Image (cartoon, chains in turn purple, green):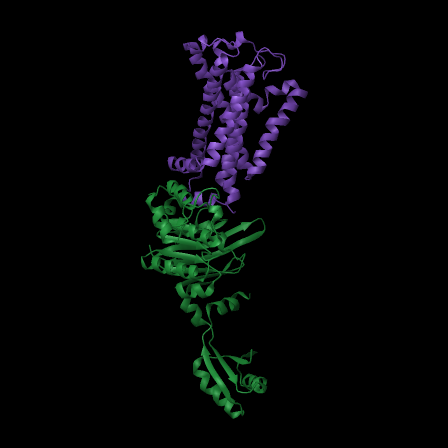
Length: 263
Length: 299
């Protein structure tokens, strides 16, 4: 499996993919964190409708990670696209046959791919964290936000928890991307389905029938990143996401193992 | 173990269509075996089954002495290029080979050696998407050679290659065979196969038409005498004379083709003389593999 991971990392570390993805993540994180600090006290900030972020909220330990976790959804969508394309392109390029001739144990291919993409996701989340925290410290003075609580042990613990939650949410979206890639065997179909579902259909569904949001995968992935919400608990989202993803992954893994590679 | 590949009753059915039907053949260890057949005859399906990419509907087989139901036991010793080279377009040729070397656990040093072997040492760092068809094909051959294979399976390795490239592939196959590597090669260039393949498996519509030594196949075909009368007006007259004597003849391009071996040349010449026809040439030929292929497959 480690041979597969090493081989996959060679593909993932190509500059056009790695650097451009990190750059996009850093730009988005920088932009959103900047907006939080520049629109402080405004009802038009990047927070949920009706909630206002003021300096007193940001001066608490959670102020350190506010920008970090607000970009989690975009990180997730990025992971979905990367995981889907890296999986499905093996079919469209015809390279799957090369992989399977060199490593016939198909489950090892899947596990190795997943491990390599997990490493890629960790790099993305790290880039997100670094930029969000850097920009937060840089703009705190301008926004009259006190940073004294940001360098306490409570803030460090909160950062650790948020890092894990954002990573879990990113991996959940990425896993969804991999599932769609294996299912559709085409990067375009997999990415289009994943993005349209997560960005548009889930939002329409939860806006029209609010009770559905508790059951929608994307809403639950995002809830994990936020550490839970009053309406839906963190543990509910974690367990439901695990059930959805494990079930779907098991189905596509069986398909991957049994399907003839005829292209 | 005396066979590199051995299959019995190998069958693959897709829905109601049979891609391969009860195919049985053997490829002796250390030999070069040509795999021929018209498009859609089941060659690639067979190769994919041998490589564990698709599951047979029926039948059994072994590769390097191991059952094809356990490809993980023999694939580390098999190099393959199936249906043209498939690589990552955004990676360089060398990086593509490194991906496969990492995957198979082969030393990375093999990459540079193989790039040189297939004549890509100057373009190894260029992206695969910038390669010509011939260069892609060379990279595919390099990838197949990564494991220092005991069995090399090549599907149309000369596609897109210029004459010198074709000659290089031919020499490479001969070189590998001389070192004891078994080579199973499918190609539409039958004249090339005739030069290198001691064994041959011929398919048509999913069925094995012939499996055995190439020389045995060619010898089993009737020889042809090519008789050219001095004057074109005598062509049809001579053909009729021969037919009346029981010969099977055709007239093509000013020549009478007579199905007969070289021993009959004197008799044919005498018949021409007795009919008042002068022959400007009388040549005995053996059918080529290409002619035999067309004859057998009805293409």
